[in-house]
Every structure is written in C-alpha cells, then in structure tokens.
Amino acid sequence: MYNYPLINERKIRLALVGCGRIAVNHFGAIEKHADRVELVDVCDVNAVALERAVARTQANGYGSLGEMLQATTADMVILSTPSGLHPDQTIQVALSGRHVMTEKPMATRWHDGVRMVKACDDANVRLFVVKQNRRNATLQLLKQAVDQGRFGKIYSVAINVFWTRPQEYYDSAKWRGTWEFDGGAFMNQASHYIDLLDWLIGPVESVMAYTATLARNIEVEDSGVAALRWRSGAMGTVNVTMLTYPKNMEGSITILGEKGTVHIGGVAVNEIQTWAFAESRPEDAEITDANYQTTSVYGFGHPLYYDNVIKTLRGEAEAETCGREGLKSLELLVAMYLSARDGKRVALPLEY
Image 1 (spheres, rainbow, N blue to C red):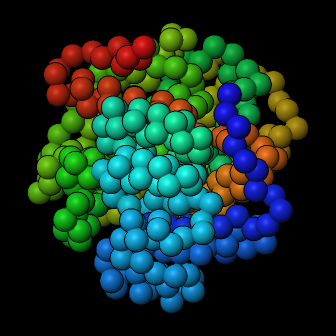
Image 2 (image 1 turned 135 degrees about the vertical axis):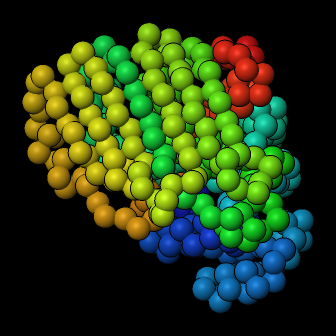
C-alpha cells in the first residue's frame, strides 16, 4: 500500500527528543546497534538533561524540536517525551518527511492516536510505537504457545501490576500525574500489560472498569481494576495499583485454557512460574533459560525492539508494532477510562 524508501546502503541516522529517564534505554539500544544506526541529534527543553545526553552520545544538541528538524539529517526521530506531546510532535516530524518512533502510550486520547496514523500515512513515513516487552524471552515463548494453539480454548486471563510510585515520583515533573500529558496507572505504568491483552488473546469485545485516586495527590488514578470479555468468549481481569508497600512487587499474566495453564510473574513478567500443557514440546526445555533477573520494570526488550525497526527500514522485516498496532492498546485503554467515568460497559471497537 505504501512505498517507503529503503535505507540499506549506509547507517540509519536517528534523532531523539526527550532526554529523561526512558531515554537511557534508547541510548543503550542504539549503542548496541552501532554497526547499523547512528544518533546524530538529541533535543530537550531541559538544559541539564540535554547536556547530559550530549555528553553521553556526542550527538548535536537542540533546545527545540523545530530547530532540530530544520538542521537534522536524521531518517527517523524518536519521541521519548511526555505522552501528551506525542501526537503533535509526531505530526510535526511526519511533515518534515521523517519516520517516527514514539514511546508508549502513543497518545492519551483516541482521536489523537488516529491523527498520528493518518499524518504518517499522508506523509508516506513509518510510525513505530515502542512495545519492547513483547520481545522479552518469557513473553516470546508465551506468544509462541498461544499461536500454536497449545492452550486449546482459552477460558480466563488475569493481569496484575502491583508496583509503587511514591508522591516524589509524581512531584519530580509537572507533567506527571496529569490527564493531558501523562495518564494514570492504566495508561502509563500498565500500558505494556494492556498491550498483551490483544496481542496474546485477540480482539476484546467489551470492558468494564473502576479507577480511583486513593493515596497520591495527582489528577489521574493511582489504582484501577477492569473486567474484560474477548470476542473468543474468554474472560479476564486487570488489577493495577501504584500503591504497593514498600516496593514494586509483581507484574504478571496468567492464562487458563482447555489444555494449558501458564503464569508468568516476577516484578515485570520476567519469571515463568507455571508452565503446564497437555502435550509437551521441545521448547518447554527453554523455560528456565527464558527467566531473567531484573531490577527494572522496563525489562531488556529495547535492543530487540530496535532490531526489528532497523530491519524494517532496511526492507528485511515487517514492523511488529506500527501505528495501527499501537492503536489497539490505546483503544482498549480509552475504553477502560470511558467505562470508569460513565459507570457502564463499553463495547469495542470504539468506532468503525
């Protein structure tokens, strides 16, 4: 449908906007792929963050996106800025003729996500949405098992995100904990887990949710619960809180099916704790090796995610998480918020 020029005769040139805490993961991923990509520019309105990023990367530094776009030679711009800024920045980058990679969530409002996809389509540039958790070894094995039909009919799914974000976290930047720029526990912290619901199980038919701000002094929710029904007939729950005492406790997914049960837990779906199927397969021996230790809820998927993006731009692979794929989790998130606000079941899709 779209004819994207390939970049395979040289290194792919990258620029990054937003040099805060998640930018470090991007810098690390870019460094690991230095044979195929190079970071030429970085941008941040915070002079201290910008200076730190320039010192690490040796890239050119800019104080505004507009200024950078006028000068950059980048093929793709990475947005690791506050979520509410992603839509307008994506459109600005697309209009300059460059591909876009945006951190999660791609937007905080449904119509903004749709605008982003349309702008990139109109400009004939690619839109990538970071979903690095999909690349974690534990979830890759789970996705394989689902695709192979090992569960048979899936009956029940449960996702728990029991983490902690103290008031100091929200106070560290004015945009944190706001509806316009951040979103709450569902939209921000649990975004990657919400993504698993469609990616692993399939399209959701309807959702009912409650949200609450129980302890933190913020606009958005610090806790939320949801009940879901999939088009397949499966049912499930999502239970999220940022109030776990005294530290991050669990990020998990459980799938119960006709012929299989799997529970992946740990602090960030990093430990396969139950793996039971009616029929064994050779890859079952990989379970122990797939588990990994982590002190970070981000996991180690960014370099693997970048590998797919690089191969896509070189014409060697298809994009695993394009803008349309990103819309799937955004749609479900928005449905959860609509349900919680209006006190009713919300059917999907939101629009045809």
